[in-house]
Image (cartoon, rainbow over all chains, first blue to last red; front, side):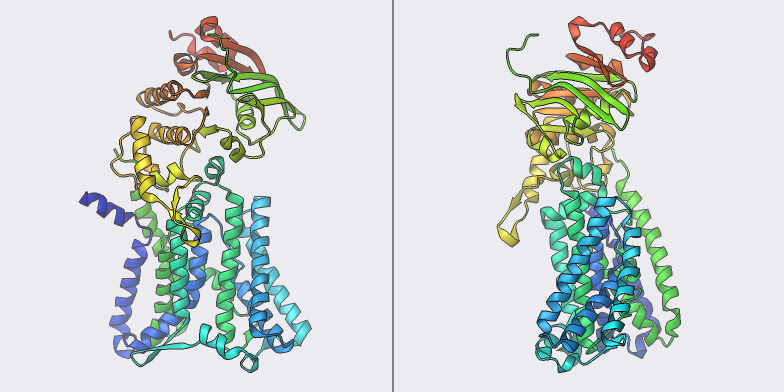
Length: 336
Length: 257
């Protein structure tokens, strides 16, 4: 009984990421502890960075457990942020309405991503690599056509801005330090996604679709529908991140969100989700994003040039894959 | 054996082609409750095309298909499942990284609660999985472990037990005994006997005539998409059956049954 319990814990996909998060935290606590990493303010900084990636990573983890990739989420941030800003600032639409239109746009593109993937049977890696450039190119081209520039500010003068700011870009003061409200959105999405994954039929279908889509289809899971919905959910998460960023910066830039697709995948993989689908967790993605935030800000606190950040993240990714592979092999060996 | 009752499943003159290639020619089969129909034939004989039609993956170009006397037209495996036809492919029996319980209920999960709070009833799911597998002779200590940790025979058993629990009346088993050890083969054949004694109609696809002859009630031998006809066990000897199979079957002639 005790052994079963231990094995169950060892089998959890996020175990490696939990160990990793503790190790990274300890590392920076030692080398940057007296430069502010350990303070509440320091914690608030890295949690803010982690939260925006985390919202994306949580949705991407669902999609990857379902066996697919979405490389277009970064471009989607640029597109939906700019769409909302142009509609609100240039066309004078109410901010809520501009946000909703941007959301509908995201859902339509997410649907198309999914539809193309399930209809053609092409790898989603290729399909969304295509849409990554299509969406980015469209955003840059159209924005320049409409407003003659590639950046647009002035959201803070649009009516309704204050309410939305309170919801998406305010700070919550705890112990005299402002914590970004995006942390709340991060934890809320993670909770909802974990509930979907572990406690609903749809969650079971996601595991099935990713684990073996043929088997799942054979026993009656609507695999294609599941996958299309997952693409729509990642697009919606990209929209939420875009809204948070646009409101925080009072405007948008067509290049916003670049490389986010890769960072999200890195966070998800560090979190123990299998690249081939069928196995993983949203809590792992939360931890993966947390590691990302701690590394990104920890380097700054430690006084190391931020140039080294990418090297650090890439190495973490490789290490995580090796560790996770080892644990998964242990978990799925036949036992007698 | 005579049957006053209707066959559970019946096809009349089924044809199927892929481009210029005629995969099935004029195939008629009947499957009765409490009987095992063995579908024998070499690779490429049309066995898998036929079961894909029966299970709703393909549809035939010509011919009719009846389930319990009613005409059937399936657009997906789900449609076939809803009419009580469950198919178990050896390679696709389970999803290795999902737990045994989650595998058992995949696609038909029990839920409790309403609306947004409609959620999986894992307690019920675990209990039913344990009970149903125990009926087939597999006793689980930990139903939360990944199904990939089950042996080859237990995987087939899980898939068969699942089909029976969800009301399958016809079980189509694709090569359930290939790539299994001798002991495991006996275990799987015993599950099939149990399914038969519970009144199911079983279609067993195999290229191993020994396994087929030890369990089958009727035999249909396919070569190049064409059927040699259906034979009751008392009407065909093991050697005659192998002679019809040709090719691969000859290896089995030297062994005695």
